[in-house]
Structure formats: structure tokens, C-alpha cells
Length: 105
Image (cartoon, rainbow, N blue to C red; front, side, top):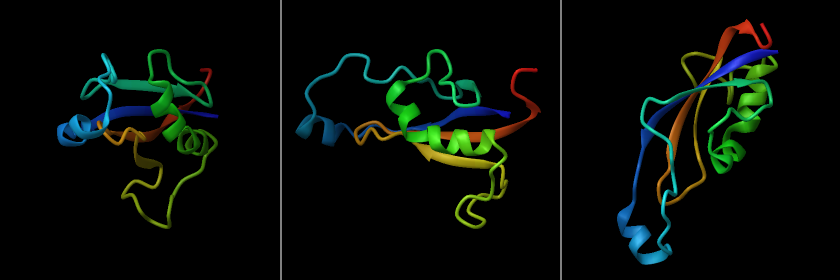
């Protein structure tokens, strides 16, 4: 099984939607732009948002097991995916990339 690098690429914040629909939340997202995590197969990396993990884990698992070329050529690098978390108020976009070394090494 391969390790998968997860990098925070973009963070959006829709204040208009938050003001209209969301109850105030302190520390709703702890991610930082450029932050990188390494997934060891199916394990959620320490400090990684549980809700975001639910959004990306299927893609991480597929990459960790050697899967590639999602959606028939969607990504320039077939061993990668650009996936966003499911927060409609402050979505975070993650670049997932298969690492060449095997997990556990």
C-alpha cells in the first residue's frame, strides 16, 4: 500500500451564506493553506479534520491501493485527485497525490 500526500491548496469562505444560514461556530476549520498531511493507507492522519476525511477518504484509499486515472483522464497526473471537503460555508480543496514509497517503510 502506498502513502498519499494531502495538501491544502485553497480555502474559501462564503460569509454571505454563513450570515444567512449558519449558527456561529468557533474554530470550524483548523486547516491552514499549504498544510500537508501524509495518509498511511486508510488511516486518517493525526490532526486532519474528521469531516474533511469523510469527503476525501475514498479517493485516498483508492490511490493508496494503486488506483489512478479518476474519471477517465480528469487530472494531468493520473495518480492524483483534487477533492474538496463538504463544508458548504468554508470549503477546503485538497490535492491528493500518491507517494512512490510504500506505506510502512
